[in-house]
Image 1 (tube, helix red, strand yellow):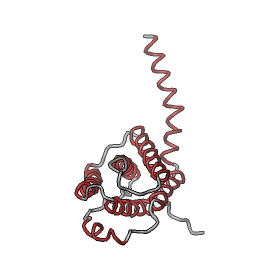
Image 2 (spheres, one colour):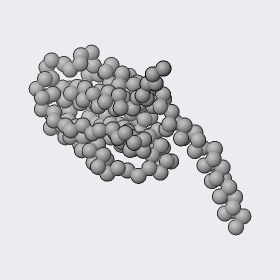
Image 3 (cartoon, one colour):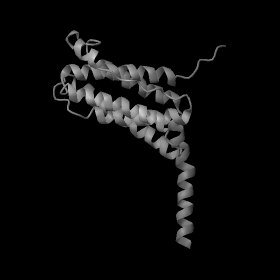
Image 4 (cartoon, one colour):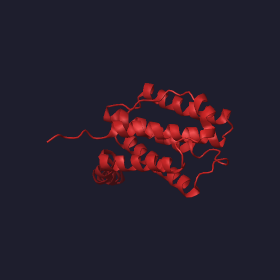
Length: 184
């Protein structure tokens, strides 16, 4: 019985001490915006051109329906967690044909993994339930990107198109995640 009480006390102390740290990380919008901005910038830095001219046919073949970012905090965190998990997996795939700066690519992979981990902690520790409709939209979006890459045999142009598309969705997420400005 003493072991149970000691275990309970240790668990309670961990919750009291660690929960605010995790919650602060999840609710610190400036930090979230910083890493989202860094990820967008790193994606942009991978290519010198917005979309290489020779990749226009591939860009025209990409048809995806973008997921939306929930306005509810719980739904937003869950959507971001899933999006960063799937983006992290996507950018670990067959990258042999890309001509991106390997350091910038590694930075992108690290940023995606870091955000996946952060949002996973947020969702787990805040005990948020997944929103199945949004989850299906996010999963479908990344499946469409993955299918596109496979169809195009992971070509340089297909990766450029996916990189540009990811930049667009991150821009949308960034805009919707911004705190409203207070007018004085």
